[in-house]
Length: 108
Length: 361
Image (tube, rainbow over all chains, first blue to last red; front, side):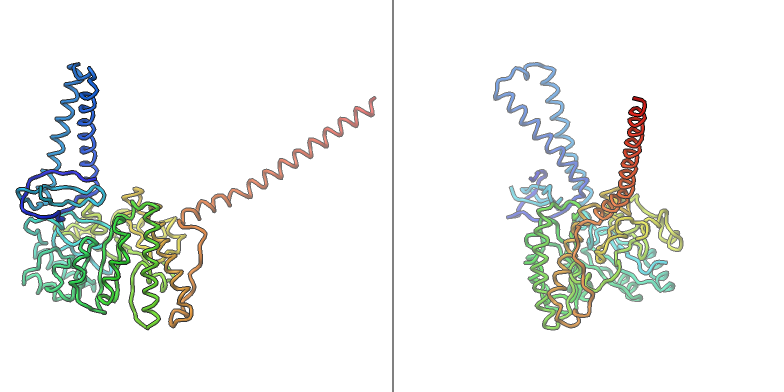
């Protein structure tokens, strides 16, 4: 599974532009899963008409968690891009292959 | 004490063994080792008869650096992009650059390094096939071997067998080609491991020393000290790197195994204890070597090599577990005979009581 972030431009297909350590991969993988999980949870609750979202305590808790996870997720990309100086092209995104730890640049 | 030093010329140096270097892909300006530090290392190596291995990044060196390293015997580990600038270098290939393998000219005297990950294994024999005629020795490194699954091990074995079949054909025509994971074991009768921290030491661009480059790239704080402070002493717990302190490895005969102390530490938290995955992969390689040697029994000089025994295990840890059971066996036997003696004694006592009772009646 891949995770995507960043901004770039002009490449026709994905090209390998970097790599992260397995430890860094595990960090972004956990954040990616949490972000997806929370998004899916909200979707499922809305679709099922569950009243839990009308409960302000749970609503605030889910929104706060999603906000924090999204921030940490973006911070990871910013921190690693800064650390490893990945190529940045507008119109393209960075994506990570969780299996190989490789970072790719892909046109959107 | 050390035989050679690995000198990382820039932080983005090409990873050439069981580790990866995320800085290798960086588009930032290279951080070269200061010329002053490099000069002192070269001088020390010359005075003490040490050989140097220089690890290059994607950037060619300036003339000052080149003339300095040219004053001492050395090996250059280089990325493929530098192969034309440094034709005497050892190119390090990555599996995802396989489209560029065709750019390498034929050269039957060259050494090559090929890094693959477990996910690349289904294409391993094809990759090696595209390199036939371009090397004399190929060092294959399975990066991420510690995460290999049993299905991937099966693929590894079948791919190595395909490569070994081709090697056998070449050996029959008298060609001298080596592929570390297959041919090294044929010639060895004792352990021939990496011996990082014993035979060699790594010096990072800032002058700090590490057991090997993998320790540096994994955690820069994992240094054993500044190179000039520790090079003539032994670093803390260095004895644990020795084969004699490795209870599993010292019972093993996969003599070609790297016995990678970095992977040991990463997977088991002990430099002298390997993970099961490392042992399984080494035994897959050993088995392919065994079958290759068997198929070359009538070919010189392979008919002179000692046969490689067939094994009943694929992880030497099983040997140790087996011996533990055997050691417990005599105790179990004696306990059983003691139980029997007690039982006979009880029967005898019981009989005496019965006889006495009968007499009284």
